[in-house]
Length: 148
Image (cartoon, rainbow, N blue to C red; front, top):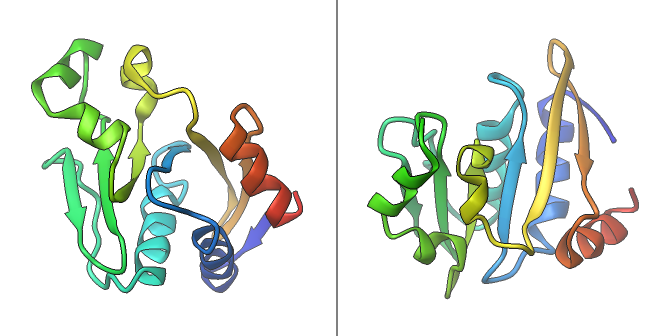
């Protein structure tokens, strides 16, 4: 799916968010500047959360709105076992909320099986290509709904 600018990214985020439910874990894949945090912000807005930001230095941000969102940025993890220093099971198997991960590949041995894997590729300027992988049941369900 091609996204041409922020308005289309917000529309995509709203469509995606309308299908999310408690317990979902979203893995956002993409290079630095691809739009992972922007997409997270739009998903957060859908759930009445106005202030979301990249948790690069905090590792975890927790947003309270219509649903609780755990937003993890695992970019700085050099060793997968560093995830053991936080209560990762709360985030990877969220009860009463959902989780959005950035740079999850840095802790691949600990990730849950039924994640929704979404890759964002920057084409140029504000133009992006978004792909939802069908490598999990939730990924298949979301992709089917969005008509990809």
